[in-house]
Image 1 (cartoon, rainbow, N blue to C red):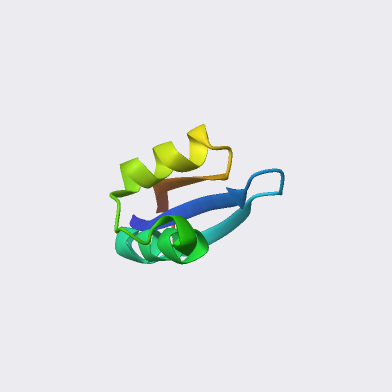
Image 2 (cartoon, rainbow, N blue to C red; image 1 turned 90 degrees about the horizontal axis):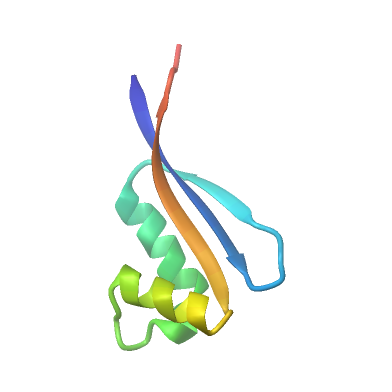
Length: 70
């Protein structure tokens, strides 16, 4: 089985966008690009996620999925 990383991301009040990424580092880069104005002091993803959630700015979720490719 192959693995792929899924990223669900949204700004508060908007619909999710879903990205399929080859690695977690790519998904993390997308998160930092989406929320660049809140990541200027280079927070950890956990710190960024907590800030976004508590200030109702947005949300993201990164998961690893197994996929069957033939």
